[in-house]
Length: 178
Image (cartoon, rainbow, N blue to C red; front, side, top):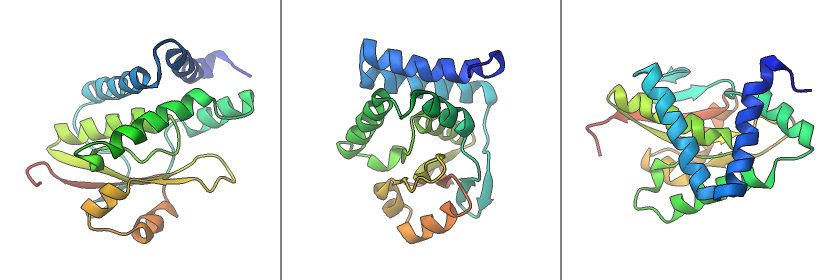
């Protein structure tokens, strides 16, 4: 049931569906990225989550409960969500810097990655999305950015160790390194 206290996250998710239908997945992808960056500008420089040296990880999925409830209301993940994720993955695979894209197990990962990446940039760091798992109970969906894992000189097995206790895992490094 949609109540006033949880209407805003569901409105955003419904907006994603409508945006894809009206403007396509690529414009929706840009829209979500822009929202994340704008929110980061409001919040300011910094990091969230737990750190282990140069690894940053979040033990919970931002808006995971709302996403799960939204999908349960509609019975399955809307095809529009999948189209936006596919658009991001396609851009990553055709990019000169594929390590700069998020590992996506759900639609909100786009917004979250652009938010966390921009906050890191403002703090003088680069952030690379290594992997994330789905917030859906019983789901074994894990997404990786293998380009970022390779650039970070890590292995999937090392990322998996963090994913045992976290929803998503990032590598952080000073912005002056290449």
